[in-house]
Length: 192
Image (tube, rainbow, N blue to C red; front, side, top):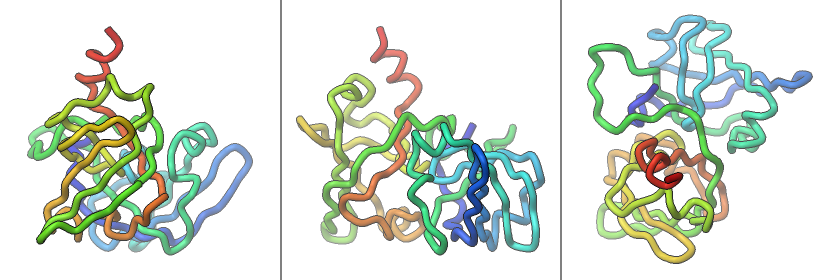
């Protein structure tokens, strides 16, 4: 379980496709020193296990079904990813409970700077409408955010400068997809 508070933006060092899995090698200048083999780490909101560790490098294996459901299948060498260690007992809970079980991908359809903050408009599929609520929590790329506006085909979130500068959202282009995890409480509400 995670909080959606990103601790570092890592960089993809290497991608090794294997039979049924893909190994992701992520350069981490800060987080790697607090990681051990077998720890869970959120990578763009996807919970993966550290399988190997070297100086400033973390190794993860992602199975094909995980890649199929998330935008990890689209990352490239030198790409940027959001990193967060799993929540530990006694840690601060600054965001909301994020499980690291991504529900799917959603397209970034607009990115607008308004004064000193950013607004992102994200595609909203009709099948997902019951899982989103204005002023409710949502995780995009593993980041805990608040839904500000819901319209027919999209919803909006707003980012303070710190969040924009300290996550991979500053690198995202219009048309790219973001991993999305709906708030667990809203998933229960939406399925009733």
